[in-house]
Length: 97
Image 1 (tube, rainbow, N blue to C red):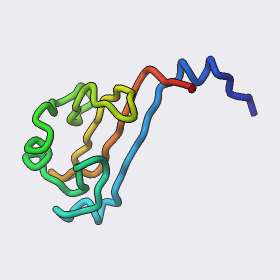
Image 2 (image 1 turned 135 degrees about the vertical axis):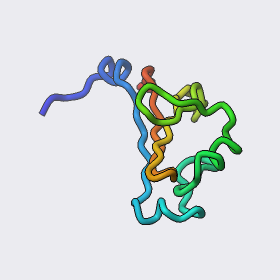
Image 3 (image 1 turned 180 degrees about the vertical axis):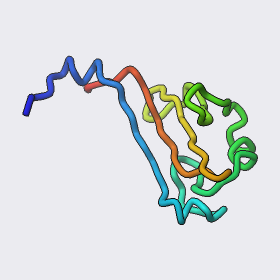
């Protein structure tokens, strides 16, 4: 097993994935996945809360440059059968502090 150095951590991409089980995602009042976003929301409900959400190249919805703990992330929202199932926060600039 290789040891992880601070330089590796600085250059690594940070990715936080928040997922609800598919059965829960079918409910319109599912668990909170991130901030005010709940599993099972429709795209219209998501856009009502986050008007800057746009389609991404990966086929999911994305909100760019959201700040979490002082660090910028892109928030990716995956819809399954018209309902929100998965939120992924991703940043290419990791901070090892």
